[in-house]
Length: 401
Image (tube, rainbow, N blue to C red; front, side, top):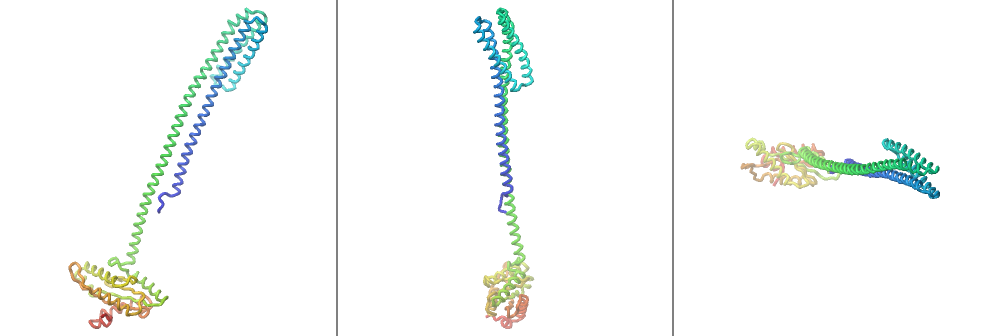
């Protein structure tokens, strides 16, 4: 009952927060991976741009080499330009093959196929120019170069430039889109993660608060139940008017005292006290005065005995005193004498003078009985002998001074 937060609930909330933190970290990690992958995609686009640029440069070198071949008159110089022409052609083919291997979209594939046809036409024209040069027809070679090869190469260069520009624009757009998507996803993931953690903490705090309140209520209820239980025990074993032990508790204490005396030796004395003329007090002054008389008598009885002794109200106007550790009948008579003097003191209730007297019977264990019933009967009989005596006869029954 003193626990305000059960371990199972605490473990569940810790696990919940740990899972949310794990989800947040995993999301951030995935976003980072996504950013890396997007960067790879962008690098893929840049690679295509580089290949297009390489192809464009190689194509330009190829055309320039052909042009120099046409202008050269020296055979060795023409051969050098021819070697450069072939090498540039190799670079054009290499760049286009690498671009095709990187993968092309349907639109890119269509443009690439159109370029392939144009490259084949350019190659055919360039080979025709070379054939004319080999045949010594320089003017025809120059005319074919000017009218066919150079315009076709310019068209190819424009197509490559357009493709490079398209890739550059797509690259920039992809970069902007990827950056915005990454930032948006990052902020949303971070916001949702923080909100989830805050919500979990709020739920945990609310649960702890509710459990603490419920625990306080339960403790208060338990305290009330304990008080009620104590009150019930008190009511079951004590007289509600005087607060003295009732008949049941008195019998239990008497039984224990007898067992103790049997085991260790010794004597037990009980005094049976019956109020004199109590019915007349009730009839003449009312029950409220009678209750006050009983309460006062109980107080005087308690004040007249030791703390180890017990006083009880057996019912009505009858009381009993349990004296343990007495040496004999004389000890009991001395206590009875003290009780009678205490009861005979002047008393006033509600402005009314009331005389309190009592008849007291005495019984000793084991002289007058060996069990509680026998002792109660003996004390009750002694009390009636005292109550029925008159004057000096009463004094003889209980030799008070």
